Length: 102
Image (cartoon, rainbow, N blue to C red; front, side, top):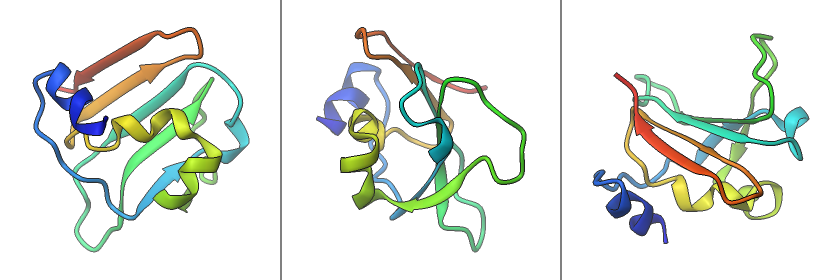
């Protein structure tokens, strides 16, 4: 299914890193936003995901192993193979938008 999303939007497949950054306090809100950045040198997180409104607070995102997404936020699993520079917005009513930044 992850590869299907990449094919649908004509984007290359890039398997996710083991860790993602999730705004845990926003879980349950809608829509869901995801942004994948190029993996920083020495870093282990390239996906940043939040629900509802974004915050600039230093502790907005928490690092989570991708295995935990099955329970925490299964809706995003199909988007994790999108390449660096990709963004998505999805909601519970079936809305989906995927694009490349820049």
